[in-house]
Image (cartoon, rainbow, N blue to C red; front, top):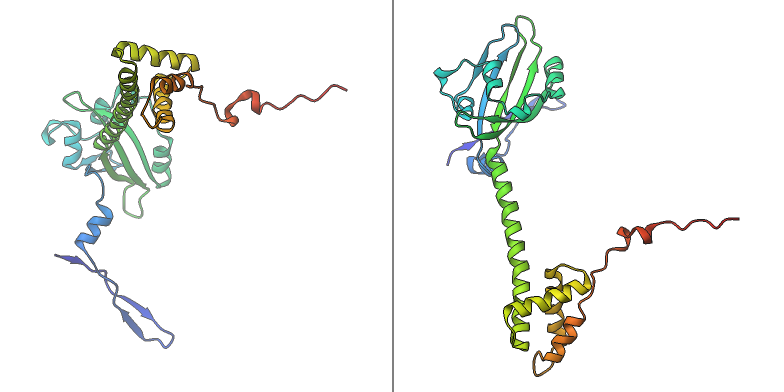
Length: 258
């Protein structure tokens, strides 16, 4: 495996001699592990000569927008034509200040590629005011962050589905116990559970969770009897709110009139 090695540094000691120090080396694998974690993203480069107004893009920026290199001339008109309609009026003050002062900036917006697909991109750049004999320019990168957003959405969706399955599983367990102990149909078992939830004014899942939790504690040696089940269903109770969120409990008492 190839390795990268930092150049040796010369340190001047008090006697005026140079002492060469051998810096630690690191492998390409170490570097990839430290910098290349996560999702691989498409990154393009751009450069703008602010004096002449000429643009240059790398192939990746063409790809993000759905263009081929010969199909469009890099510039503001091309970029504006692909910006998402809802984001066209957004002006990022940080970018304006970066161009004026030569500071780095980063901002994000959406584009609509040639196939009509919405993509989220992050623009990173830095304005250079230019020195002697050099024109001011803006240089930077465009990162297609769409895969990251899709992964985040997929994780949230998966979490919602998981919670739904867990919630439904508890309800089905409680209904199954009622059906087995009372010898009733699924519709009747669900109605009994709904009635218990209604009396306590809580969601069906919380009522089912209370029923299953108390059955594990209150069950008799012979198992869950009808008496135990009736006691548990009647014992379903409201779920108390934290004291700090109760306006009646956190309200300060009025001072007595003198």
